[in-house]
Length: 77
Image (cartoon, rainbow, N blue to C red; front, side, top):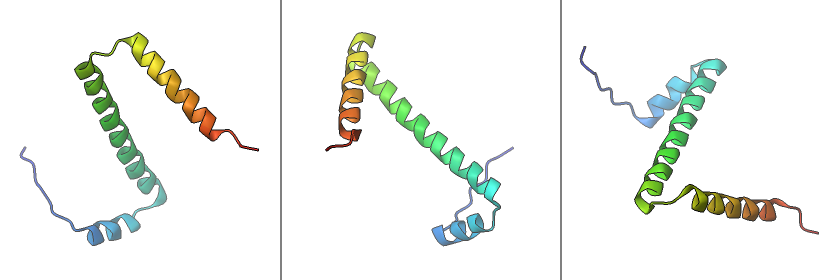
């Protein structure tokens, strides 16, 4: 079976989404977020391969990022 391409402008798409029920809207949102996350993970994996990072070096980078994140998220008095 062949593929069919349909061109829809953003206004038509927004109107179609508004007609969906909440469950369908949440499913679309979940799919979009999942695809975006997978894209980021794939880019991350490609960069790891390209830079030839070891798991030890990755763990160091992750730990440093975690420390920086928590330092920024702590309330300042």
